[in-house]
Length: 284
Ligand SMILES: Cc1cc2nc3c(=O)[nH]c(=O)nc-3n(C[C@H](O)[C@H](O)[C@H](O)COP(=O)(O)OP(=O)(O)OC[C@H]3O[C@@H](n4cnc5c(N)ncnc54)[C@H](O)[C@@H]3O)c2cc1C
Image (tube, protein in one colour):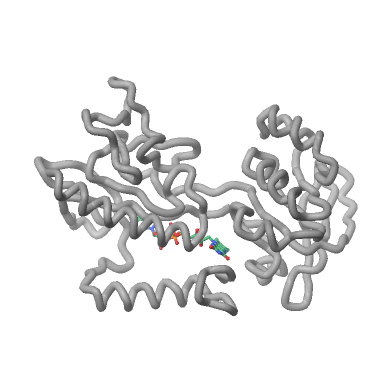
């Protein structure tokens, strides 16, 4: 359920949004290759060629990668039902201001969870970071660990995991289990932010496409300029904002390194990418 996309006061399911987008794009003349995956990308002379899982190929002068990312899920059915209604996956930036004065929980032991906890602490009355391991230092940068220790309204619960929760229509409580003793405790909670990892679907891309941390596609200013390193920007002109290290190939949305991981930003980047495709086609 997408709860905070402009124009949908009561939220919209991902399925409905995708169906509407499909109809709209069809009316604008887009053609689709349904139930197929892109499996390869290469340049053949002046054309960029995308291989499709049914053995066919499509080619063009520009390509936009918008293959998103898969979020690791908690796997707790009662919390899955409250996704978007107090249970959030991915970055906390958009929801944070609504957490003013509330007690919130963040699950995860890596940098993204630490950053979310610190950001939320500016609004929430208390932020509890739930970490499965026995130490924060294992998965988080030192500077974040220090900042967390110095922030009075951020608490850390080590060796703990979320085992249940509920609420009527919205998250109201969480059940937290102690990994070593197996004991559980149910606590009141206004929100749960799940940051236990997201994986982009980029394994099929060629080595020329530079990828940042965890395989997300680097674009524009994040590209390596050092000649000779694999996936470095190969041309004299600077890359366009959303252009990858393969000139003419652009990336938008969750698949992009350092993207915001929200629908509005993915849609916005899509329209910027198209404008840049026009810019690119005007130059070649
Ligand atoms: C449970 C959940 C709740 C969320 N709630 C919110 C919310 O309330 N508000 C909000 O703003 N955001 C929310 N998000 C995040 C939001 O869904 C994403 O930021 C957004 O969908 C990103 O759009 P995208 O187009 O980049 O990728 P996606 O929407 O992930 O689309 C990528 C598409 O590419 C397809 N694909 C992948 N690989 C290939 C391939 N090789 N060949 C062909 N097709 C491929 C995928 O099947 C998918 O259809 C939520 C996400 C989740 C998982």
